[in-house]
Amino acid sequence: MTDVEAGRRPWHLWLVGAASALWNCMGAFDYTMTKTRNADYVAALTPEQHAWIDSFPLWANAGWGLGVWGALAGSILLLFASRFAVYAFAVSLFGLAVTTVFQFGVSPMPGTGNSAGGMLFSLTLWIVAIALLVYAIRMRARGVLRSAGDGGFVPAMSAPPLFPPAPKRPYAGTGLKTGHRHEQGRRGKAGGRTRFAA
Image (cartoon, helix red, strand yellow):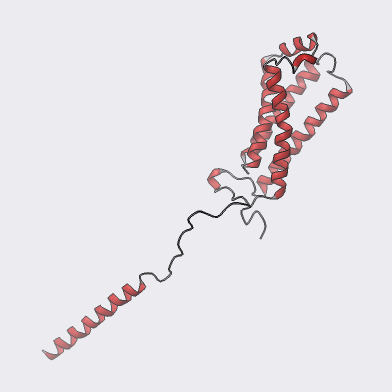
């Protein structure tokens, strides 16, 4: 019996989910610190880079947010073996595409926009985002990722219930019914003898 048939999550689901959650937490931290203008975090940015971030149009800001929070949500849903992880990673990939169009096609970031380091980092983001989406799709196809209505999965290390149900007695009540039938049989026989004697 496989792990899926036994209702257990495969070990690599925990590994991919935890590793991707840590990776995407860094993106969420960067987004939060930048948007809140944390003084220590944005101190290394030049005035031109500050102005570039402030110039983000609404669609670029939306793409950045979808890419960051969609990826983090997908990792968390992956740990819960939810099929909605596929949709979250798809939204994240769409957000990354929007951000990439803005950063490399519309308005490159001053200083590091189209540099080798910036392009390598963007390529890494794409590889991770695509890999997570493909992994989630494959896990859903194998039946590992399910919705709440499907009954979900029981963790491999789940504890037994505190008060297990009492075992059912397969013949409980049979003796009662049998005794009742025997009593009816005796009454029928007695009645028959009485009618015959009359």
